[in-house]
Image (cartoon, rainbow, N blue to C red):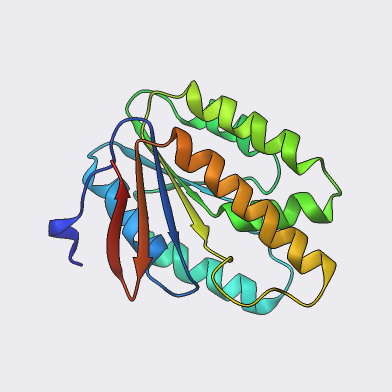
Length: 179
């Protein structure tokens, strides 16, 4: 998909789901760029090793200098309230890393998901949320992985219900599911 054919995000919330390396981040970046608004990238990932540092560096280089990057592994709700201002379009990448961070902090994930949804309902600027669809494979063999899959799945359902648009990305191709 070329940037010339990118779809600008609708006002409100857009959810982009897909598997690893499906093209969901690039699709979200192109959506935000097509908006003509100041692009804000809210990163939930944290650097724990050299491989993650390299991934983050590649993402930053791909976006280029026009983007403002806000690193927020925990307080996503607060970051959105601070950053989703008039004249801006916000890309959050990604929700599943945020869920991982919350699980590692032993946070009340249901309460935080509810808080995130409340924050999203109050935002008027375009917000695009990228997340990994992790519920399409086999049932994980351990409780933590099953909890992760379940938390992510419930969060996706909650956000999809309030979102203006939902896309599923596979092999770089978007399938519009809502909106």
